[in-house]
Length: 204
Image 1: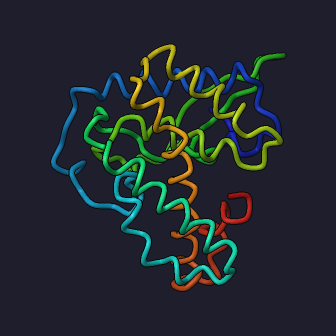
Image 2: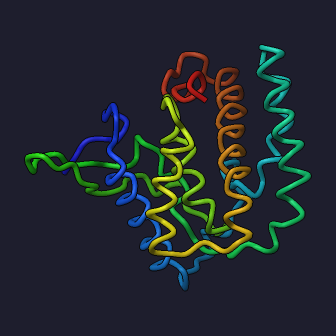
């Protein structure tokens, strides 16, 4: 039961922390799980963000194109050399606010009720889980990093992040936003009338 978190205008901090904690428990439950189907190449794998760079030319606005290009260069310089330091496991990999469900039937309390859409599950760096969730929950917020911090705090309280994971989290969050823009640019060429595929582009 529930509605997508995307329909909640201002999620309270307690709810964001609850979601972070739940994602951490999911990752802990999957820590020893593996399957050949999870060892696949998909464009939404954060560790492969640079492979999307070929789509930079599809971003028409030169300022936006330059912004994304600059962050990809940072990713190559700061993240790629350290990917080997990060723990890996199978993760949900797409905990955006349209896939996270909340239930407000209990008076005075909004609670997390579940997650949908397991189609992007892969074996990758585990810290991509909170990075991806934070990236989408930040969109449209007046203080986006406070929103991200609430979710990550909840995650860290259940599955403590290593020093390397903490240091690289901001870059990984930004990488997911870049990936969203680049995939949106691809989609605009392939399916120009599909509005859902472009849903995050403007707020990103």
